[in-house]
Each structure stands twice: as C-alpha cells, then as structure tokens.
Length: 327
Image: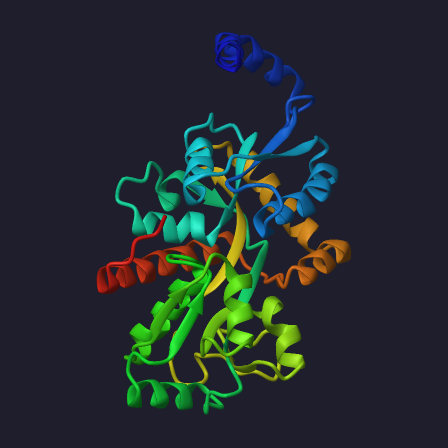
C-alpha cells in the first residue's frame, strides 16, 4: 500500500509543483505526517530508552507525531538495513548507535549498508563512557601499573566481558592492542554476570560502563583506574582517562545519533538536526540520560562523521589483528 501511495504521489508531481509555485511552502513543508524512528534492538535497552526519551521532544519540535519502531536482530543490522533501503523522504530514520554504525560494518563483509555512504547524521545525542575497573586484590593503582603487571604475568590476568564481540570485550581488545599486553578473556552472558564475578574476585578486571560500576566503586568493592573516553567523565571526574594515562588516542564508548537516509531532502535533514539540538538541551532529557549513565556532548554532523570514520577504521584494525567474530 505504501508503494502504491508513493507511486500516486509521484504521478501527481507536476500538479503538486504548480500548487507549490502558487502557494510557496504553505502546507507542504516537512514534516506533513508522522516520523518513524527505527530502533535496531529490542525494547527496554539503552538504545530503545534513548529513542523514547527524545521522541516526545521531537514531536513537539517538528509538529508531527514521532513514533518508535523496534526492529531488532543481527546486532542491529536488520533495522539499519531497513532504514537504508527505505524511501529517502525523511520519514523513516534510525536511532544509530556505535555498534550498528561502526562495529557491525567493521566486522561483517556482507553487510547491506555502509553508514558513511547511506546515511547523513545529526549531532551526537548521547555518549556512555566506560571505565577500567579492577578487583581490590589486584596490585594496580593506575594504567601504568596494570600494563606492567600484565607484561610481568602475560595471559594470567582474567578480563571479564559481556560476551564475545560486546563493546566491553572490544574495548579490552583495543587496550591490549595499544598497550602490547595480553589478558585472558572470560566472556559472560551480559555485563551484569561479569560484574558479579569481578566484585567477587573470580576475574581481575573489566572495561565496564561507568554507570554500572559506580556504586561498587563508591563501596570500595572495585578500584577505577581510568575512563575510556578522551575527556574525563562527569560521573567520575577524579578518574583520569586512558589517553592521559599514557595510551595516547585511546577512545572507546557507546554513542547515539539520528541517522537519516543520505538522499533525504535537505530541508528534512536540517529540521531533524535542529530538532535534536533543541531536545537534548532539555533538562528532563538530560536527567533521563544521566540515569542511564549517558552524557550529552555537543558536536556537529561533521564532527560525528569524523568520529564514525575513526571508529570504523579502529575496529577494522582490531578485527585484522585478533580475528574476532562479532554476532
């Protein structure tokens, strides 16, 4: 039915053009119908919550309903492919995340979309910093200590993760690559299970999300060594970054943006970009993100594209070095 509707609209293009010439933008300016945000993951996760957090503000800013449509599966590839192949009219957009836009393309040669070719982007919506935490029994107080310990005891320090190919795992692989050390990877079924064993001392270290580890750090059950973003986290401002601790250029985080089919009308793209800037500045939106352990970081579309290109190249390199497979 949708294709038939698009065909009818196309057939009436000349009449519409004449009407617009006479009436200008009245009644025809984007958007004139509901906008759909595709979330490439199941309901309830951080990406889904992010979409549902910004949707009301986007509705208010755009003047049309903004609805969330969950299309999970294949690590986000199903939803991203759906949007990449949808009519480029600005009415079907993707809540893009680092995993969908950088990790999946880097680890899958048969992927049906290429983010920098098929999408244009708004600014960053949010970014979730990670933190390198160790069990208190580990005699390391900083990044230099953990590197020295790993070199003295190669392959004996146990690194917990949320599973093979998870962001938690990949961040650890990036660290090992840049520091020229080797941990013994212990994958769990989710970050929660890994964190339980880390607090219990069954594993030695983990590259966890700041929000998940914060309470254990406060209770003295875990020791933070460094955060994984280039800037210090507002949630742990006293903890240095891995970059400033000696591994220059180290950066790994989870981030989100709105990804729009690249051929969408320029006015639609600009209105979506303007709307995102307005929405993420709202205190209630920022408060919700803080509860998720996410920070709002100002950026431009060009900033985001550069971040994405650097991230993609980084994960391609890690794939070549390690042979890791990502689901």
